[in-house]
Image 1 (cartoon, rainbow over the protein chains, first blue to last red):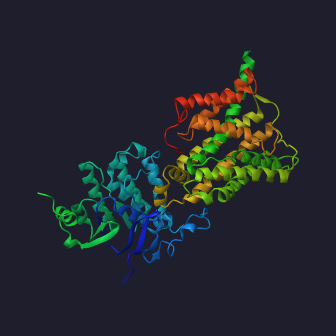
Image 2 (image 1 turned 60 degrees about the horizontal axis):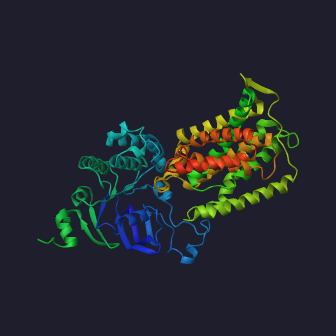
Length: 262
Length: 295
C-alpha cells in the first residue's frame, strides 16, 4: 500500500499560552477529500493554520507523502521558547516548506496583497510549484475556472469584491500546483450568485484531481465534494462520518446541538 | 534676490532633493518590507563613501569612478545583507521587533562608525569630483558632479521602481511587505526577500554616500545629517508607493535650499520640522501617504 497523502498524528496546538486543540489524528489517502464541520470558534481554522505551518505545532507530527513537515519532538520549555534569538531556537515548522511540498492552504478571508494587481499576484503565486513545473497548464486551468478574473487582471486586489478576492486566493493556490489544498470557509459571506459560481469552481478543482480539505458551514455543499466528514467540537474531532452516512444539514445540526424548540 | 541667485538656489535644491530621494527611498524599502526603521542608514552612507574612496580615488587603489562606484554598490549590498543577518534577523519574528531593532540598528551604527575609524583613521577624506566645469542649460548651471548625481539617482530610482513592479523577485518583495502570512503560505522565501530588501537599501545608501563624499568630507558620522533629512522626507511624504518619497525629497531639498539662502543655514532644520509638523497635523499619514504601509 502506498503512503497516505497526509497523516496527522497526535497534533495539538494553539495561541500560546492557550491551547486550542489537542490530540488530532487524521489520515488522508491519495485522491481522497475530507471536510470539517463544527461551530465557529472551536479551532478548525487554528488546526488548519497549524497543519500549514503558520502556527507552530505544540506536539505531534504532520507528514505529507511520507515527508515530515514539522520538527520532531515537543516544543521546548517556556524559558527556551522566549529566548529572544530565532537563530538558536529554530522554527518548528516552515510554511514555505509546506507550500513547496505541495500542501497549499487558502485561509479564511485572506486579504492577499491589497496594493498589487491580480496579474502581479498571479505572477508571484507559482513559486510554490518551483521545480514541479506545469505552471502554464495551471494558468490555463485558472482562466477556465474563473473567467471573471481575466477582466480584472489589472485591478488592485483591494478594489475587488470579497468573492473576487476569494477567487484570486484560490487561483493562486492552484498556481502553486497543489498535491492537497486546504480551503477554509471559501464561500463565507458571499452573495448567493457568487457562492454558486465559487462552489462550481471548487467542484471542478476536485474533479481535476486535486484532493481537498474543506471547511464549510453548509453540509450539503460539503457532502457533494468530500469522502469523509470530520465533526469538530471544542478543539477535538468529535465524530467521523463516511460520505454515505452524512445526514442533511438540518439533521446534522440537530445531532450536534439538539432539536430546536417547537 | 536676483534671478541668477534664484536659479542658483533652485539648482542647489534639486541636487539636494535628488540626494535625499535616494536615501529616503532606501529607508522606505526597509520600512515597508521589514516594518522597521534602520538607524544605521547614516553609517551605510559613510561606509559607501569610504569604500568608493578606497577603490576609486588616487589615494586609495586609484581605479577610477566607475569601479569605485561599482565597488560601493556591490560591497554595500553584501554588507547590508550581513548587517541584516546579524542585527535584525534574530528578532524578525518577535512582536517587539520595532523596539528591539531601534536599539540593534543604533548599536550596529556605532559598530560600523568605530570600525570605519579603525580602518581609515580620523583624517577626513574626499572623493575627487566626477568632472571639471559645468553644464549650462539656459540660465541654469550644473556642475558635472551634480549632473552625474541627478542622472544616476533618476536611473537608480527608475531601475528600482522597474525591479519592484516588473520582475518576479521585486513583486515577491512587495507581496511580503503587504501580507507576510499570505506570502509565506504561497511559498515565498520571506527571510531571503528581507535580506535582499536590506541589501538593496544599503546599496542605495552607499551610492548616496559616494556623492556626498564628493562634495563634502568623508568621516564616519557624515551620514547623520542626510539621515535626519531622509527621515523627515519619509515621515513628511508618507509612503503610499515607491515614488512618494521622491516627490517629498524634492520638496524638502528645495525648502532647505531656499531657507538656507533667505534665513540662514541654522534655520533650515527648524523650518523643515515645522513644515513636517503642520503636514502631519493635517494629514497624519504624510503628504502622499495612505493608511497602509506598503511598497
